Length: 403
Image 1 (cartoon, one colour):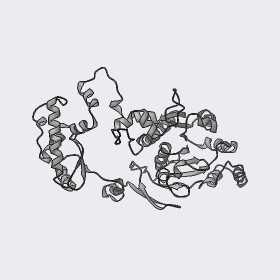
Image 2 (cartoon, rainbow, N blue to C red):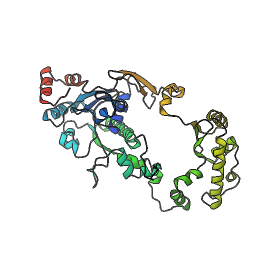
Image 3 (cartoon, rainbow, N blue to C red):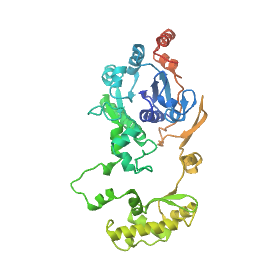
Image 4 (cartoon, one colour):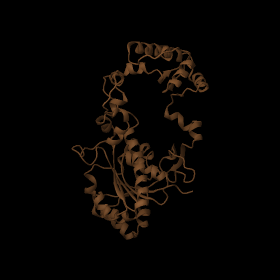
């Protein structure tokens, strides 16, 4: 069965994480995605290479794409783009705001070739404002938006540490895919293309929702919560945290009064806050929280994770063992939900990785092709757009087409 985006053609000018992640999801949904790389390739190809121009990071972000290597600094390569764009539905650009114009792939230039084009530009800080010129990666976005501080990870010197994986990048990739699908839907109704902008700045702020909010009413409880140190906040939050068990660790997530009572009963520790209402940030409330947390820590250490999971499942308490991602490739629950896909790659051999993130009954998301090797589909793509053998040879001779 065809995917939901069968027939949609995407030209992707991208590198690193955010835009490649978006393009991969569009490809999973059936779109024909052509990834344009410079002669040296996406920089991510060279991060911990296991073979020339191949790395795990690149493989993880670029399945279901065809590869085209163009030196966009060359006029002849820009000519190839102009010849291809009229047949495209979507163009994705993932560079600093000043770069597309220099490479001839800015919105104004490409929209002249195709009025129905959906042009999606992702930047770090946006295309307006005094910081628009700054290059940026996930770490920069986490730093400038407060996300790194909100995450609460610090090293031994008290310096904030970034959240991993690069959630600003990966989150923006999903935002890009969402925006593209929305723009395609709008075009179906109006017949009009449009420019779409996304930023690491916006995604990183959006992740913080209630923290990035100002109201006329601020409660003392909320101010105290913000002011609490990491250690104090952790001790105050016995119902939403990770505990060490006799053999490993288990996470519990009880966000409602009913679930908190169930957990307290399941571990056999009394919590006086269930018997009467005590203000959370009052001295008595803090004393009760610290006492319950200390008792819970001791109780969890008495049993294995498997024993606690059996008890929590019976009691209806949200809980899970703490696992490493390496364990999950063979996990029965992951397999039952078709979250592992495999393919053969020319350099990596058999590859297994996380599959499409959604299940669609009538237009299934699938993996149809492995990530392209550098320049793998150059001739295939150019022939498809009417280039003769002599024209392709001329492009190679000029340096516009690499590999």
